[in-house]
Image (cartoon, rainbow, N blue to C red; front, top):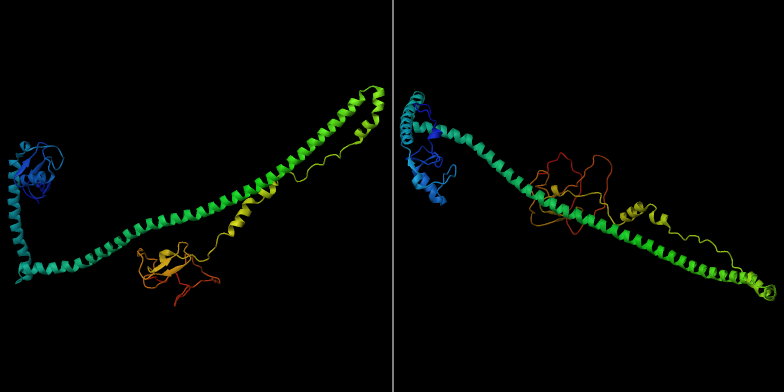
Length: 347
């Protein structure tokens, strides 16, 4: 409001009630308040501090601001005079156009225009609130989906890891079995050769002893010594296949394990998309089967979801070719499978 006052209206307003000061008081921190507002604020908070800067104060520190009070009273007086003058100007403005219309009738006419303009805004606000609510629900559902999906991922990898652990244990056991078998074979072979070496050493020692005897004694025992010398053993044979068959254990190991793993997993060509499922359709954890529930599930109203048809889409589409599937159907009266154009609305 323009006038003789150098201070703007904001500086003449109480920070508590935001109205023009009435009976203003000033604290030591130089902040002004309506006396009644300050006392009420202190009573509600139970502590005496400046509502603006939180500086501690007391009743002794409250002083009337007479200069501010005079300024506010003069400001209110001038505003009242201007309001009266403005009302007269308003009447002068419309009296020529509306003639016999009263100010109330004119105001009501323009209020009706504003009400008409307000309705689309209210509808727009309602639409925004509705979508925001859906967004809030979707945000919660995202966290729930992520938590559930993470749990299922961990379960599937736990199964794969357990398979690999079992396969590792089986192959290590096979290796240990071969090691024990061939180690036992070598042990028996070594024991036998140790006995034969001992026997040969004894023969050689006896013959060498006779070679060192006197001639008469040597000739007397020659025939016996000759028999000992003729008792030779067959040369030992090298053992074939004694080593661990490393190639058998390591050859194409990853491929063999992968090939065996294929027999434990199942490939499903069509995975259902839970984000498109009608609220009464409940999907299995592996997303390969669906059942009907009488009550709708608490799922977001996202654009991809079927609202009017009890349908669910596959997670991947196709643009050409021939396609066929084997489908297991439970005890149901009606069911249908068919291709759906991407451009078709789901609602």
